[in-house]
Length: 101
Image (tube, rainbow, N blue to C red; front, side, top):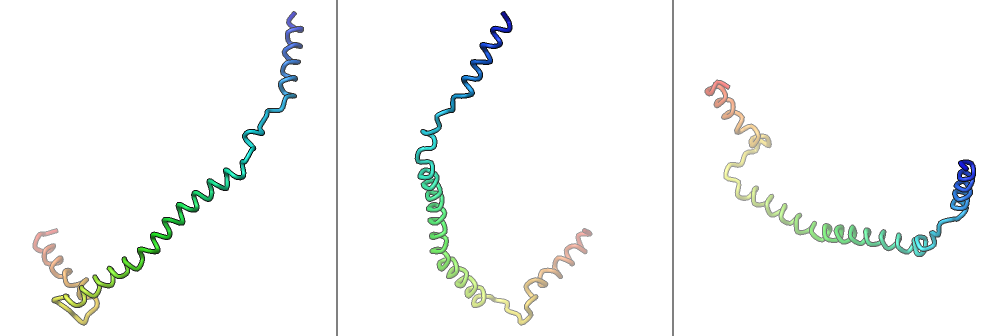
């Protein structure tokens, strides 16, 4: 009895293995869907790149205006390029010495 059931089960498994799954519905227009998805991603990226390049002149002009403003309206101008960096250093040393830090 056990052997007979095993043989029947083996025949059923063999029959199921011989049937190929129908993948035609999945394969239909696969390339079209894939290309549409890639094109959508590219269009989103292209839109971002287009806007970023359109903003470059505006941002560059803001940087130039701020640069000119700092040069023109600088009350303490020195010929030393490192004066701005070292001007606060002496004060820092004095504060550190007096505070005991």
